[in-house]
Structures are given as structure tokens and as C-alpha cells.
Amino acid sequence: AQTVTQSQPEMSVQEAETVTLSCTYDTSENNYYLFWYKQPPSRQMILVIRQEAYKQQNATENRFSVNFQKAAKSFSLKISDSQLGDTAMYFCAFMKHLGNQFYFGTGTSLTVIP
Amino acid sequence: EPEVTQTPSHQVTQMGQEVILRCVPISNHLYFYWYRQILGQKVEFLVSFYNNEISEKSEIFDDQFSVERPDGSNFTLKIRSTKLEDSAMYFCASSEARGGLQETQYFGPGTRLLVL
Image (tube, rainbow over all chains, first blue to last red; front, side, top):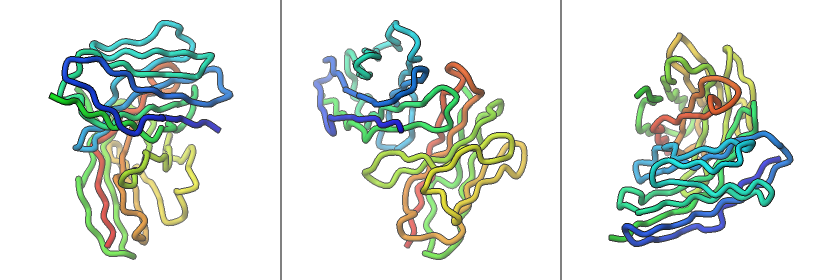
């Protein structure tokens, strides 16, 4: 079975600063994908960034980047130059290759302080 | 940019009533999913659907639930006799294919279901 753990229920960051959200997972699979989704107050799930496990290079999307440590089963999200619009719940998710479902963590509520 | 849509955005129903939640996946996607999120909790998988049949379902997806793709565009989740504990946000998602990042699931905005 796959599990995803987000150990930080709540975090805050000053506007324009950098923040890192942590995520660890447990799996016996070798080929899988990892994702970060953002859920603003509207509660829509928005894809932020994704990573293929077989790729050693960390994914980046503008101000968002990940630190993927496969051996440690760690997948943290770094948000640079934080903006007020980044205030949201952030979910880490795992999906095995050719799998049918995402496994989500419990989320981290991020507040960007002006 | 194509997106998954869901209707209604909010639904209030009496316990024991049937509800149908509707989703229009991204047009070239072949795999469809339903998830739910009880307030304050994490998102949980309900069911996946491909080629007009269920490919996987969770323990939550009992006989009260059913899914259907009645035409070429809609994907529905039916709850036959709602219970109080069915109150949640229900998300539809779709993905393009299997293999690589085409497996990425794109989520709709959700339907907030309240059972009284």
C-alpha cells in the first residue's frame, strides 16, 4: 500500500520570502509519479508541479520547484518569492505507474502574510 | 485551455434521496475518476473508469454508488440513497492516457454536497 505523509499541518511565510513544504511517502514501487496540488479557498484542485520518479532532475515551474530524494522517499515543494495568491492548502500526491488512483497526503495550509 | 467541468457546484438534499453529480471531462481524455473530500480531511479516491467500465474502486464506493458515461461527453456519479456522512466535496478528474505524464489527472472544480 502507498502512503503519503505531510507533517506540517500549517505554515506561514512573509510575502516575497521562500517557503518549503515537506512530503514523504512510502511505496515498494519503483516507477511512479509525484504531484503537488494547490487548493485555494474555492476548493478547486489545481496542479502545481509534477515529477517522474525515474528522472533525477528536480522539476521546476516558475516560482515552484521540488527537491526529490528518491532514496529517502521525500518530495518537498519550494515556493520562491511567495505571493498572496499562494495562500492555499497544498496536497502532495502519489500515483504508481499505470495506476488508477492518487494517494493524497493530509495537506499543508499555507498562509502568505503581507 | 481545456478543463474539467462539474455541475452543480452545490447540491443540498434530504437524507435518503438520490443525487446525480455530473462531470464533463477534458474531451480527448480516456480515463475518468471520482474523489471526495470530507470537510477538513484529505482527498479520497472513489472510483476510476475506462472503456465504459470501472477499473478500480475503493472501499468507500459501495452499492449506493454508481458511475456512468451516458454519452460521449458526460461522466456521472450517482448516490442512490444519500446518508449524512455523504456530505463532502466531490471531485471529478480525467487523464489522457497511460504512461508518462499523460497519466496526470486534471480535476474539476468540485460539487459541494450537503445531506440534511
